[in-house]
Length: 181
Image (cartoon, rainbow, N blue to C red; front, side, top):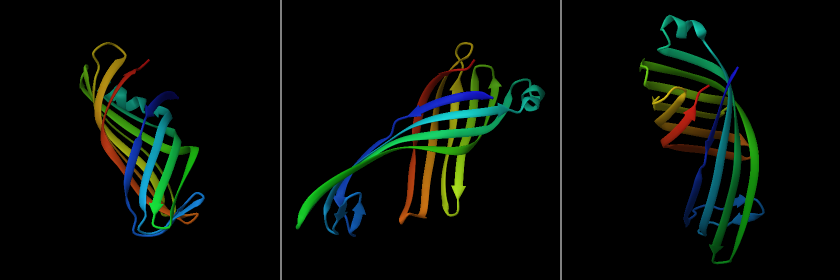
């Protein structure tokens, strides 16, 4: 198989007053507390994939379709700090989690210097799922090297796993540079 490696850094901070009591790690945050939170979710994607050679050959290299397995390794860290009328507290958690996913991508290269790529990764079980899609315009200024601009959408929906439910969506533009060999 061919291999592709990608790195994405994600950092989020937020603050505000919470409406309901919740537990994070070793602290219980009372309702009406002021909360400050930090989240880091750096991701390394290692994708092993195969191409459909008959499609590339039939289109003289203008269309390619690939399928395979992606392992997304998420290096995560979360911190919650609160202040309430009855006290304050803080806790943090970190974890490194490998997530195996099904991978599919396709690229159209109408001319040799330009490509349009769409790709996606998915895993689901029961009502929980994690998927991401991206669309990208690639420029190939020299042989084997490319520059890309695109848009990525990720969704992590957790449906009552160990009393945790969540529906997290992350989306935005990205830029990349790479080498194909």
